[in-house]
Length: 441
Ligand code: XLS
Ligand code: NI
Ligand code: NI
Image 1 (cartoon, rainbow, N blue to C red):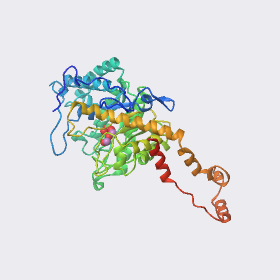
Image 2: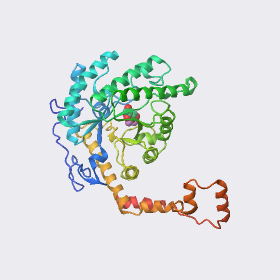
Image 3: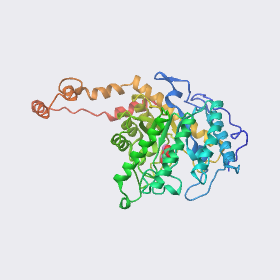
Image 4: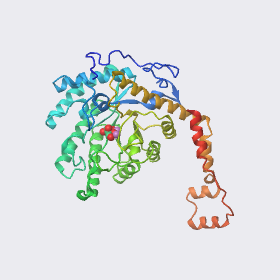
């Protein structure tokens, strides 16, 4: 078991340096040079890497078939506030050693939930004061906060979509407190991920009523936070299933439609998670593109799934080809609106060395940095953009342009088609696009 030191939790590991791709030092960045300027911006400002409090400082390796394989010294103190402070010490040591500037949390990641709502709230006040001090001392900030409205058994039938108003009210109170906490910590954004907002069986579910409740709940949360002066962005994190059989925030397209239906499109954007895209049978880049089309590409939860099995394995990202395709969408969309790249990923159960947490985050940061650099070069040096532009050239002038401008009727199009003699095949050139990506990696 990993048993970490007391005052210095990650003993023997210093600040992770950037050493470049020739380095064989496993505890060094090969691509993530935070000050490197790409497309007019430093890598650290493009990517805004964040550590996920729950996985990195909470995951002890349990799975449905087995016990913990890792132990954390910060869990040793009996008093929950002492334990929370120790965990915060470890978290800030880790984030600082990684050279990251952000973290993300659920309310009950930063302190253990108490037996009653009001006791939980007072615990959160205490740890918030401590975190404010840690943030001041280190310069580390909150990318986003959220409320865990899915773990406790009270949420087994949902939180905002629970058929029992009492549970909805409890979730509302929890969200209010989590918003207060996020604002006190100067969090830049606030996330809603609805693991229990959906159903296990449609037979016992009034879907329309539940969706209306969700829309109303999010409206109240937005109005409250805005009333308190919160300027950040709210994110919805789509996921199709797990733990529910069906989740209402199924994928990016579903969420965009939902936000527009309930009038939330000006305050909410999307937090796209790689593995959730996989579960929805989409690629990561597809989900980014759908969000970007709606001007709602807010943030990213970075991880990867496993193509041989169908659940949220939350592995650290490592597929350079895929991430490069995603970064093409990212750059073309003008980056993220308010958010960053949060490593919502966990090391494997049998990764039991202290350094494994570092290696995982180094790999994740390097893959995104390398992909962003490659994507920028593809966009500025290769034929990629020209090929794509040419593909649609028939809409840049003449009848195609008139169609785009809304100047043609269906009858006009009919006349045009009658006068066309032949239609020459226009190759999609997919293999060429694929080769270009490969060339620039
Ligand atoms: C679970 C989600 C969760 C959210 C935050 O699958 O990814 O971790 O990011 O509640
Ligand atoms: Ni996530
Ligand atoms: Ni997830």
